[in-house]
Length: 290
Image 1: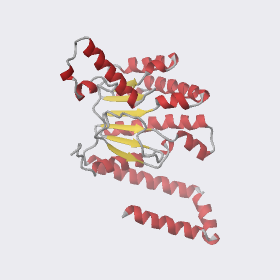
Image 2: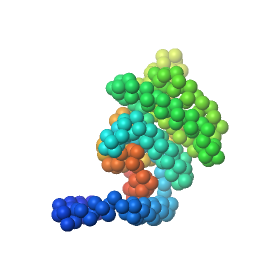
Image 3: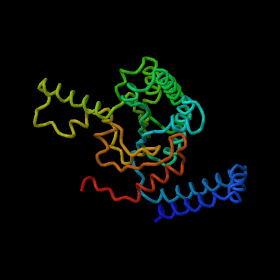
Image 4: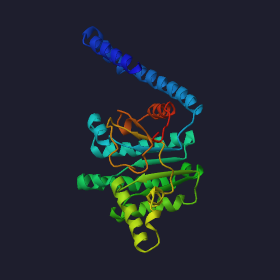
């Protein structure tokens, strides 16, 4: 009903804006500081109310996010592609703060896929690598990361990354290795199919060595060899930018995850958007294949 009502209101608004007597003052009002102040205040009030409602229900233990839409955000905002990626990095810092404030212990994000590494232009990849290094070094020195006990890890086929990126990963992981209250996982050079292949290869090697009987090979053996073996499976997967697909992300682990898709590009992802995803999760009855 809310979606239907929203579409009707949108249709009425578009019809009214077709009249100059309406569109001219509406444009002035929309661009005024008073309008932005009103919208900002309204968003904060709504976020606070949503936050209060969320705390009354069961929150997911593990949230995973496919951070999509940096380039489309840049194109729509008339800024450079690299600036769009930079805005995406800054957004991740915000979202991590929101997750920490809610007390959700596991956050996993999809930052760079194996497909991206094959298909993106070399200059874009180099800019992304520099951005990852900057972000990882910021995390390694961030006082809140240490005060909140956040452990950082990167997973994927990390050997395919440039040495300077691997060194930044090592710095972030070593600086946070003793923390255990919260685990932040960033998927780099990652592909879900590749992860399953690597796990199956390990199983095959152990079987060939006589260390694993054929009849002992089951889902638990595969799970134990995943890059994310130290993580519970995601409860909620969020994808931004309007795409409704998984794109080779945590294929094994999300068999029973709840999925939430939002139209906003990742750099525009707000606290309200996160809270709406969590509220949607709380409204569902998890069936685990039943």
